[in-house]
Length: 549
Image 1: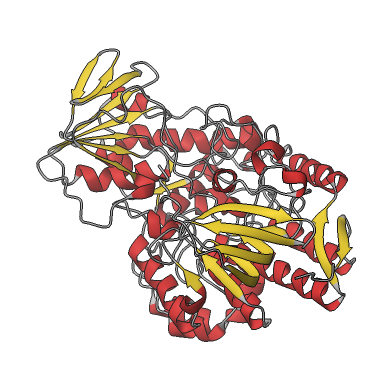
Image 2: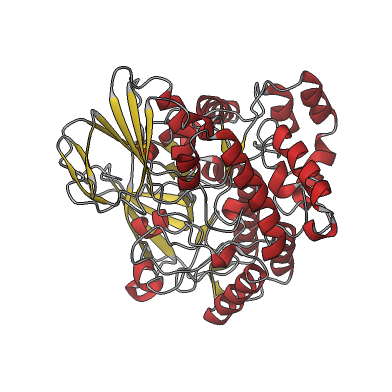
């Protein structure tokens, strides 16, 4: 789905920067701010026409924050920013998040160092100069000592290889590449392929307007009501008054949130006690059911089953047709896929204009100019929406495919495993840093907060190199292996690796299966701080090579 512009011819001149950042979302914007405050010359490139990263691209109807939102899904580094920005809802929608990032870009005068509608086509490391040589879609040739990839974990849109997918004659859209022009569903027969986070958020919105909606479901999902509502002004006031304490509490939380972490097992309570607690948290909405109920929901199969039973009971209670309800029953451990928050998803299947096609029993054979053809017949459509997700965590990095020492490409390096050290650096790729890379907390932590902490670590590392007359840094292969083992050991204490999900790469044919999210946020940030304090144990530090030109 990422059709990058053709590379025009440049004029041959080389632009020089201390650091280049790829991506202008939460991570890229803060990396620019932090590095620029250090006095570095920095350039940011992004293929979008505006700042925002994934929030610029994902404009599909119903797109909202599915983490605890305002005023906590935001930057924490500036108390002035916290005082200035007013969040309106508990789960901000895409326009609100994008407006916030636009405000940040203006507030900190970031735009002057951002070049939009520009893709990085090529990035190769020059060992003799200890610099990255970059070519862009604008024809520029760029030299930089440090290359920071803030390309996003959910930015490489995935288009499935369904026969005839490009033959459809009606309107066709991918949720991850939604057009900027208004899209009307009124009077149309719409088909949605995919019931992950994007599909679940979009389906109720589409159903309320379309003449008919057909949902093509491969994998049923556990979803929880978001209960989005206007933010109580008192919540905003208290957050502003106590921001330092709130920030410290989020930093100490496994998810980077304010959820009170229980130390109780779901199996400690009687069934009626569990039911009462689950019901209270269901009515409260958001991620409280998962993060605020019991300590062992995602670590113990029997504890997990108690929440699964509760949620399956809710599906049967909400969906009036028992046959449809059974088709919507998931078959995985609750919480081990991206936990979805919805706004009336299950209720949508009570509408007369909505049909559900269970692809497990009636698979898609092909897409024709007129619609979607399954084993049991053709479904005529005027519009097709692909809510088919992303090649997550590693996908955007592999599409960038930088080339490190000896010309090794990232695709070669990661052909079998997504090896990193700390989720921040890669052996054989000196002076290349990742934000939310494989092996970091990334998608299972408060991502704006994580981006801040990782960007600051990268900036402090750059400062250390410059202060000590060093020209390059890269991890050892042994350090990578040790880190991969740590990530795996933590994950294997949970149920996450047992589920086919985009966390494990199961949604992309041929992708190596690996759960590469560090599940212990506070421990992770403590570890990377300790490694920095140890003069970067696990890294090879090179003296600076004198410039020859």
